[in-house]
Length: 197
Image (cartoon, rainbow, N blue to C red; front, side, top):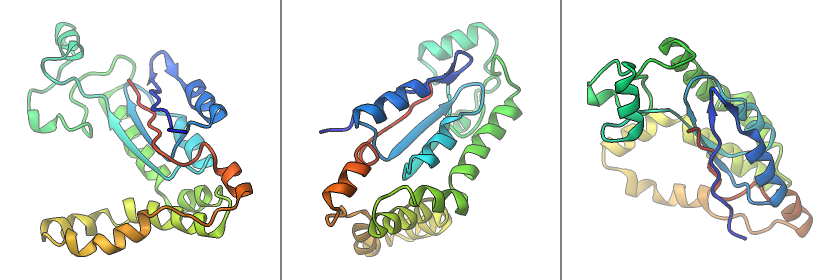
């Protein structure tokens, strides 16, 4: 079964964790979450750790020029900068409706810190059925964020091709799962995205 892509909105209307739970129930929940913060922090971070989600990418809602969102925020006088270099989904470029820009940025920073802190990585790793799956989760998640600066150096030095064997070994599929383990893991592997709109 191909995992579904799921949009989870975290905004003034509330977090749509029901969509996460429904995807898990159907077995279409995969291993990566993208959460876009609009105006408050996301309870999906704790949920993802508790369910062994491998990676998460967090973004601050960014009203790009030419979009309806930008036009609406501009009409409301909420756009605070036209420095297009800051429109990178990591910086607040508008006045949120229910938070200060500082609180929104703090929520974004908290999400990354919380999801990728060592105890969170270890806790999420333990949700997998076999030691092999647990180790793969731990090393992949740790390599994803804990060594982010090192990856930047490797990329700038144009040495990424020399890292291909390492990347392939970490990203390769685990094939020794028993049917019992596969049943437990159903809904926890694949291409899931929770997107905050």
